[in-house]
Image (cartoon, rainbow, N blue to C red):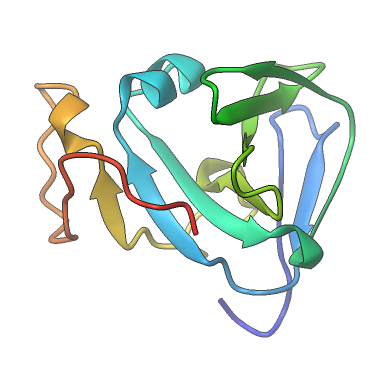
Length: 135
């Protein structure tokens, strides 16, 4: 990430976010929870420290596991954030919501044991069968 802030938002523009530091990691999660929560084959997300992150706009939230609360735009429904309860100083952000779609590149794939069978991962990134820390 460059020295400037990274910004993004939902489809309708009601929810906006801004990160002032590089993410701790950027990963593609293929677990069934992420598939169902996003309505897609995977959840490509960046983890930021909350001290380097700000957001505005109304979101709805719900728990998708004992560990994760999800947040979506309250108006258009765009899946935006994943908040890990065991790492309260962190927030996961959908990289698809970045204003610059090429600003962040994933560093690995996690939960590939649950990936869609039709999906071929050919980007050369490391792949992990199960979980990887959000830290």
